[in-house]
Image (cartoon, rainbow, N blue to C red; front, side, top):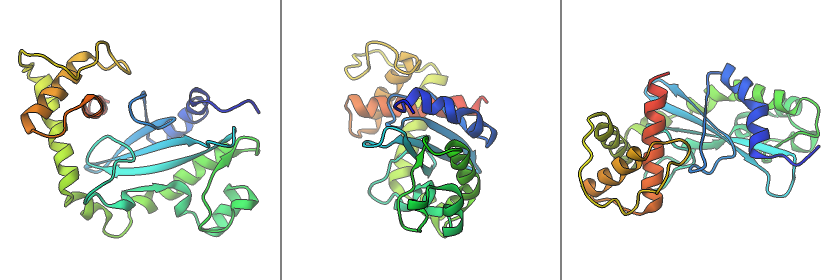
Length: 225
């Protein structure tokens, strides 16, 4: 099997995950090697794919549940269990059916190997089985709702959205806005993100502008689907 690439992994999983309700997100800003998002009530459920660093054909997936359209973002009072591996929620019997025999025991990290027949189908089945188990972890949704750090990021996203939709960009020097579009996101979203960050007085640099612009743009895109 040739070395697995981000493009190939997305190609292999896009149809199946779309069937499960996930929207593929084009991103080089969020460090997933394939990112999919769906709405769950008032929240966004992100599924990010990762290719193994040492094994060319192995991949896995991680869930992230939040009020924001991001992935693997947790610090401060953001609940740690809002970001978890798909395999963490499989029983030992299910692991025996859906993973290689050397990963059948609960507690071992779960990776799917394209050298194994049916690996992609088994991964998709694991997502189907475990999604509700992850989302319905005791206290998780309540902890997300009461996280001040998530609320701060959500407010920044809303401010960015408001600036774009109201065409309310201020005149000035946008030092941290990229010179050209990234991931097909129009430059006005980066400018709006920089303006929102300046207004709120939070950390301002190239990365915070890019991440905020991407979150707000994806949120706007999902709202129109």
